[in-house]
Length: 163
Image 1 (cartoon, one colour):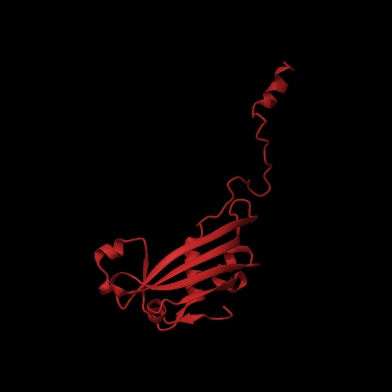
Image 2 (spheres, helix red, strand yellow):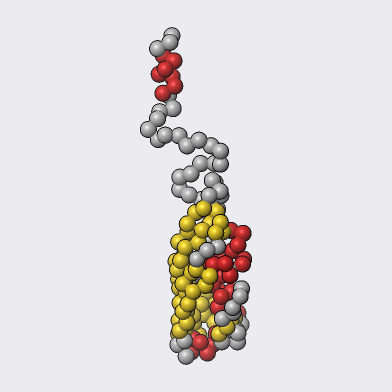
């Protein structure tokens, strides 16, 4: 990534910090192999707050469109990114109760003095992408798309008159 955005995870949450901007897709280097085109950018917004048990929290929103490669036809597949994530920071894992570990409404991260926001955004995008991106209706490369109105038995109708 070309430009790093660093925050203190504790201070940002406790002070109710706010940060927003755009991330050029080309700077998301770990996504490069999954993309057909790296043009454009993704908008992000980061809000700090105090959550349960007086812990620092971050609310992350990422919106935009990525151009993934369809794994069936190998053509471009526009994929809408609409991430909404909540992170709560803990000093160590022993602070977490069993109920908190089973709660899927937020993710727990270790406290960091210099949290790389753009790396966090890229991590969240990688986790949100489909395992096998593909169009709802496409064919394999080199295959001919059949007309949906044509019956597979229409060839038999032509043979019927010859007998």
